[in-house]
Amino acid sequence: MNLASFAARNVLRNRFRTVLTVLGVAVAVVAFLLLRTVVYAWTMAADFAAKDRVVTRHKVTFIMTLPKRYVDDVRTAPGIKVVTFANWFGGKDPKHDTEFFSAVAVDTKSFFQVYDEMRVADADLERWQTDRSGAIVGDVLAKKLGWHVGDKVTLESGIYPDDPQNPWTFTIDGIYTAMAKSVDRSTFVFHWDRLNDRIATRGQNEVGWIVSRVDDPRHVAETSLALDRLFDDREVQTLSQDEGAFNASFLAGFSAVLRAIDVVSLVILVIMTLILGNTVAMGVRERTNEYGVLRAIGFFPRHIAAFVLGEAVVTGCVGGVLGIVLAYPLIERGMGRWLEENMGVMFPYFRIETSMVAVALGASVVLAGAAAAIPAWRASRLRVTDALRRVA
Amino acid sequence: MTAPMINLRQVSKSYDRGGETLKVLQALDFEVASGSFEALMGPSGSGKSTLLNLIAGLDRPTAGTIEVAGTRIDTLGEGALAKWRANTLGFIFQAYNLIPVLTAVENVELPLLLAPVASRERRRRAETALRVVGLEDRSLHYPRQLSGGQEQRVAIARAIVNDPTLLVADEPTGDLDRASADDVLRLLETLNKELKKTIIMVTHDPVAAERATVVRRLDKGSLA
Image (cartoon, rainbow over all chains, first blue to last red; front, side):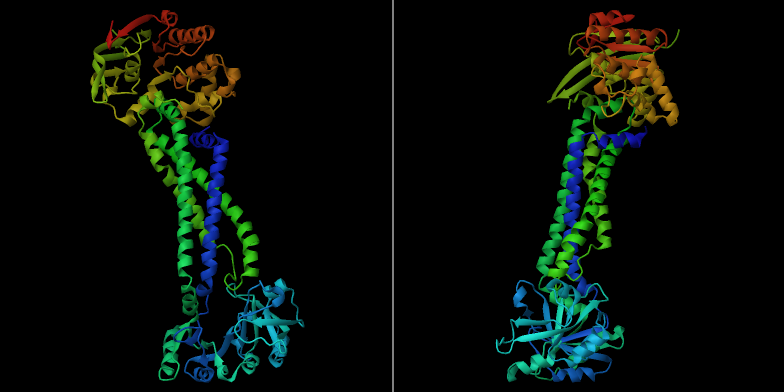
């Protein structure tokens, strides 16, 4: 036996309480990691945005459209490598009307050049480009809805008119996979020309947004400004942003929710600290007499403080590790997979951020120490004679 | 003439209780010769336990000087006092006060954790102390598996394991039946006579006091 093993025995003195405390810490760590993963997954599209892509949209709001002729102006602007454009279609499959996915009308020639992290087989891409009723879908969406290449699917749009005589029926020409974890693998893309031809003349030749790739990512800010200056004197002014800023501005609408999740994740850590503090305080109260005995036979106040702190830190550490061990299957294999498949637009990659694991473990250890600090100090300051008189 | 093991001069101890000063010991002079076995008797509230706590360095006097085993302990700081207790003193409590999560031999080993003694040597000394109190066959038992008398003998083994010069016992037989109390008193006699330990024992029990070589009576903070 040594001082460490003596302290370790005390951790398991009240097994039931220790187990409950460890579980309390573990649950808090799982909840903390879950909430941090929600924030991380939600914002990662902004964090992992391509550094060389510029998104140009209507200056007022991205709901309003731009004249399609702007695409040609952007294409000829200095520093621009390749340009594509798209319109939001807002489609859903009436057979699976609770499943939400993004359906977008895109320029077939340029879309996969600009978004080269979305990979589709060359033969499928060629077939799609010549098939006006064709569509390319993400692998996660195809798997979820049971779609295969060659299948015909009919969508309804919440934005553009649905005509029962002329439904929005598409042939699945290909399935894309993602080369980057931030890519939504549940998107449905089809020919912009087809959408443009179907809508009323007044709304024709309008695009939702234009996306360009620049020659040099270091000049993306100057290029964005130059693009906007190009349209300053036109009937519609634009706002060009690098893709990260564009995604962030989209997320800004959810900033209150994200902030609330941030706060709740911190509140969970505070609750964890209180649980630990309560357990430690109970233990100290019950063992006051023993601390008196230890002091009487020669133990120093610092030994008593170290025993109290050590027990709390070990409990916090074990709870933290258990929480992390539980969090991975729960968040990544269970909830994460479900969210990626069913809410891929918001959570294309719902995985625990590695640095957050370190934060969670560090927090459970440090906060356990903090929770035990006052009880440890008080235990070490006890008068021996008072402690010996105390009966648990 | 050899110096006394315990030498208290003009020791007073008072406590502040709700704004009132409670005088427990008053200008007490008290000496205990080295190698003696003394019993301290007196009614409740007479100051026996307070005196014992002062001798053991668990409390500090309001006035006066306390010298134990050649050390002025009333002037020592907390750390030095803890070290002094670990090296000089063995404490035997009325309620045994064993650590319930440790076996008998581990309880005995506890004071040695503070000394620079190797693990194997610690265990050997603890087993020797258990043999002295006649409990070598109970070394791996936990306190809950021992009788009251056995627990007190383990507590005595813990008190002697670091070979202290002075044993202080606060009502060591107070929680025991007569037979177990006799065992414990016989053991204390042996420690005094054969191992030359100086023992000072607070007791209410006249039978226990008879086993001591000197009996002192304390009344209202003064020796009677």
